[in-house]
Image (cartoon, rainbow, N blue to C red; front, side, top):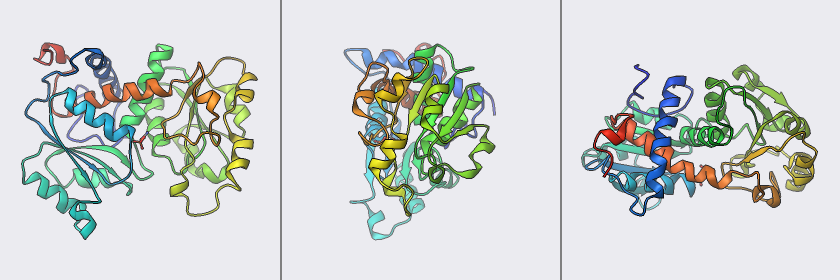
Length: 318
Ligand code: CP
């Protein structure tokens, strides 16, 4: 695959090269200014029809994909499992093939099953973008995290990023690890052994079991949500106990040798994995992450549709 293209689908960062990830980040960088215009619209995807299939709850990803599509002038339709024939037992592939019969161009999918985006991409003609599949990957979240870190530090090479919390249930952790490692960052994961998969070290990350060690080591912390809805067993004694031992608190950060950039993909459990004064504090980039999400999704949609990275010179600007 040429480094200047992405291929048909975006299912994860594991399968992308460093050049492809940089292409996405650099294209997102150029799209940022569209959202700052009084009229937030360019004709880059005029005439394209995109279906957002969200079979799991989402605020940030669903809405920012929709903004990205509208800002690129695409026609969009939103489909949720409730209210569609999925609730009557129709399969994912049948649903997508029926949508394709109406001549769509792209599908953005969030689904509880790991591998569902790739499965769908292999069975339909339209481009597929993974908006989070089970515990597998959340590539556009990984990309927006990379973009936010690059904004703050000017580079990713050599940066120390600690991913803290519920790694076991996190697709964000996997996409972050693949993306950060490919671009030369050092990555550690930190959490209770019950929430860190034993084999995670094989991905080239350091494993830490004390949040104090992660805080002392890192330049940035990416704090993960405790995914209580995915936990099928007693992974932690209690939320209060988790906060006491692993919570990212102002007191713990005050003992760090330097100021750390604080990230969280959202939604947050305030007072559990992160305290409010940290989430809302001066070193938090949680809302800039959300802002970058729109530009990253514009870039992914545009490049998968065959757009040139030099979009402003390809009729992309009005
Ligand atoms: N970060 C993220 O995926 O948030 P949503 O579940 O609200 O989309």
